[in-house]
Length: 86
Image 1 (spheres, one colour):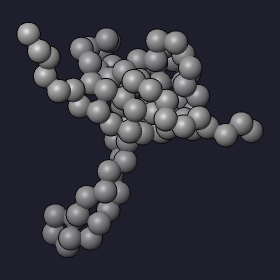
Image 2 (cartoon, rainbow, N blue to C red; image 1 turned 90 degrees about the vertical axis):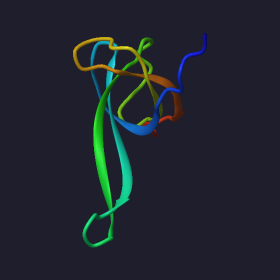
Image 3 (cartoon, rainbow, N blue to C red; image 1 turned 30 degrees about the horizontal axis):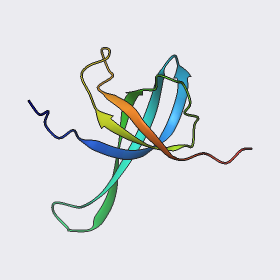
């Protein structure tokens, strides 16, 4: 039996202060419903980071998964770009 296709999003890690959890900001560009102007809308997702590798500023891909906790429905699939060291 094959599982359905899982949703995938690309975003930037905002916070890693929770244990095994990161907050990821995902932006999307959509046309305004009334005027048609392109606007940027953002959503924040809590994602499971098992190895605690992600740092704020990293660009990551998250995929939909079964509920891990009350708020976590996503997990980090891969890190696309590491944040520059300060």
